[in-house]
Amino acid sequence: MKIVMIHGQNHKGSTYHIGRLIADKISPEETITEFFLPRDLEHFCIGCYACIEDVTKCPFHEDKNKIMTAVEDADVLIFTTPTYCMRASAPMKSFIDLTFNYWMSHRPRKCMFGKKAIVISTAAGTGAKNAVKDVADALFYWGIPYILSYGICIQAMNWDGVADKKKQKIEKDAAKIANKVLKKKHVNVGLKTKAMFMLMRMMQKANFGSGEADRAYWEQNGWLGKERPWKKIH
Image (cartoon, rainbow, N blue to C red; front, side, top):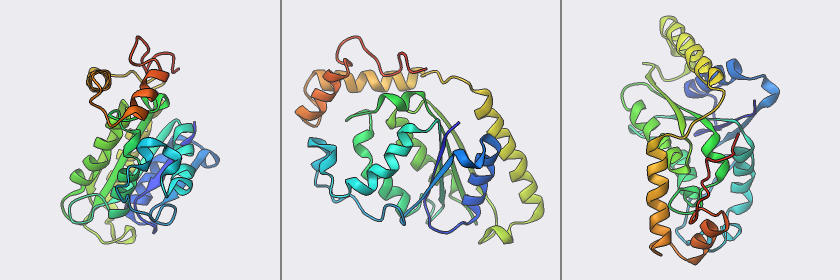
């Protein structure tokens, strides 16, 4: 089982440790690929819309493509982000911005409709659930139908400072999350994802999308007809 981890920070803090704990319980180390933000993608979306015409024309395509090629090839995606000011980190938000063309409103990738994802955030105080939601919402719009969220207050500034009792709870929670992923052999696309896809399909058919390039993409995939991205994935 291939796992891609995307970390919303360069350092290996509490959120990283929890994410890695879960990943190691799911799959051997050699199947885990990690990316660190902003080290592996240090750019901000500049709103040029070049990617709407041609994804390769994004000025940061080369760096972004290294990550997204691995993402598309993975079975499980794990996103970790510290909670900064009650939200996801700036590098993680920048990553979300730079991948907006993957959303169902633009050019969703068929492979996303068969993936599993885990989103993790820690906070010294409050806000972890908000940070998790920032990322989970984006993954939903990518088309990922199975998303597990884990946000926790660790009452510490780093992993070494986390109380032993809290670490014991985290260990148990990590085991439960890993087991859920391992037991979920096949992912079924739910009504919420299908409804959003069909809404975007109606938008494309009515020419209310972002342009001809997006509509042509939907036509090429047969989605304006009877084809659906969740069919024949497994």
